[in-house]
Length: 195
Image (cartoon, rainbow, N blue to C red):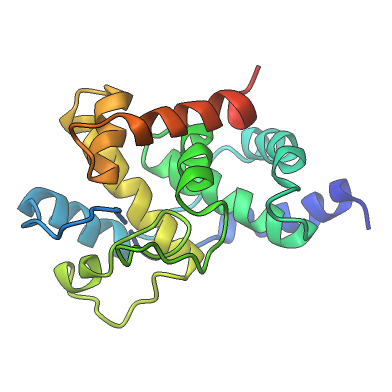
């Protein structure tokens, strides 16, 4: 089966995707901002549907080739790309930025665990589950992880008035350092930016 045929089959279910939950790779658990906690709680319980199917198809086809080295299985790659695009669009984030964050955070390993204990694609700290009153959720669940990560990153983008450099530093818990931010920008420029 060709990638195009897989894409056509998998796109049929695109509008039926339901979302789960959200993320953040802070090294030290600081008190969580009450507004951010409520945003993550709301995000976890919201069930939206993806609106612009054509745009999603074009984007998925474009990004699929780029992601092959990270996720060689066609079906898994297409499903992951659909979910990334959906969650990024839902949070009003450029999906290419989300791809770059995932690239740096986990190299697309949904079972990644950092030295600090952050988990999954977008490296969400486990304390978030307790913070939002959902301790039994699974941070290795792709939709849960993407929902939380995109919600948290969007919050930091709003906090920093869309200054991506500062928002990424907050997301990583490295506010006074731009090493992480530079890694994300490099991944974005090298692999994910649409030309």
